[in-house]
Length: 180
Image (tube, rainbow, N blue to C red; front, side):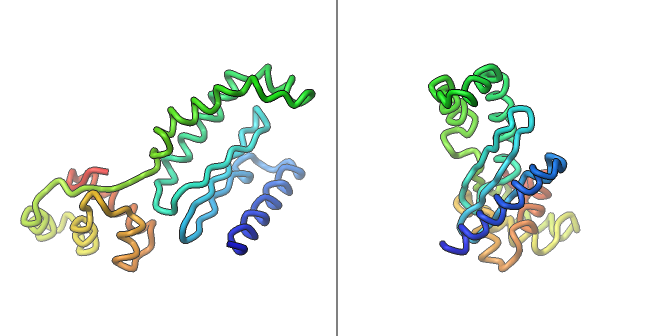
């Protein structure tokens, strides 16, 4: 746990340094991954607010990034004028709608969950591999898509990187072999 918070502190230091130097906004956004969790830090330049998400390590970070971006833009549109008041008075009461937006856009915190499910029978999958459409790793990954295994769990079972698993899952989804 100590190492995890050390990484967070270093990340915050880098972001603050970037902000002080007037660097590009995309240099202020960070993704910190550990074995058990993922932290996504997103800086919204118009509102000058940093949004942060902590999720399970097996959640889809691309989906979470998209949702954080939506939350930040929605917050800015609704509360642009309220931010000026807040910065002088620290009155937070006006921002209560943010909680509802977060709940709705994250689907109760389940937006990043990914449990792929195989859509074809094993014998059909064997024919697809014989045709050369997929490789052996894709085949092994597809067989583990039971609807109960996350990409992280699959990567641990096959001893492969999570990114390799996600790439293969996207390929299998395009071929209508699995549903994500």
